Length: 314
Length: 64
Image (cartoon, rainbow over all chains, first blue to last red):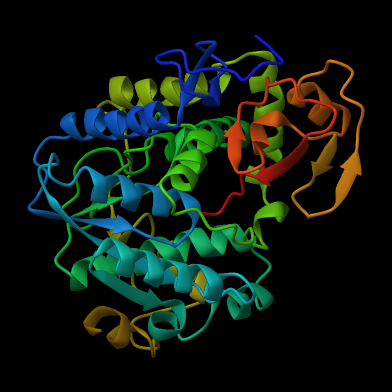
């Protein structure tokens, strides 16, 4: 495989930019771009009932930037319109840069862009909430960001949201679910919901390196700082483990991601879920009398909640 | 060969016929966490560089 001459694309004679370790082939710039766009097209063609307009969860980071770029480049071929939805969690030294990048990218791509912030709807930034909590930062962020995205989607009449989660993310999640023994999470979000917007993940079978390379090759990569909370998470540990394993066993991450996906599809219909309950803090459906958002924000009941009206009627 | 790390620091390495991937591993860098460029060109990590090459490592960050 190693060669001291310039390595060429396995599909043409142009210089290679990417090694597919599983297939043991190389791709040039054009074929890498084509490969990623074809995979997104393939994924979208498996989705039934796409609405007229979908939302793209757009953080301004490389994954969502690449996703927005793919959609922009293939928009003539996809069966829906799209807008960009951004959540500003309020992370000092990180989010300001990515929000600016997000605005700039949407402007260059000519995509309608809508932003919502934690401060606007929850009254506090993530930094403040983390400092006041003993919960893991990523846990707090994940819970509140999902709610913020739902609120923004509702405001814009969006019922389907595309996220930039890539194959590596899915493999990490699958392993995290196994390590924590959280079977419920495997089937979380499975099945239709009349309340929550449906999530689709067009990069589910695209590796993080391919996504990054796509963003670079199409001119939309920015070397932005990593989220300062990422290194403290279980996901960071799992990521390191998986990369070590993937190097020795190419395809391991793809298999881990596909395995959980297959379990979800084959068993999702028979997995017994607790029915949603209406949260007494905010009125949203959740898994208990107090939903995760209210638990994070420590909202005991509707009557005592100063944010409830703002959140629901914003 | 000059290796420019993600933090912009530079180290000099002898290639000795090794691929970039092998050289990264000796520095404790997983080749799956980075992309590699030579000049303005992205190159695959199984490239064997020349001793006079300058190779830049680009971190594939998370959180995007």
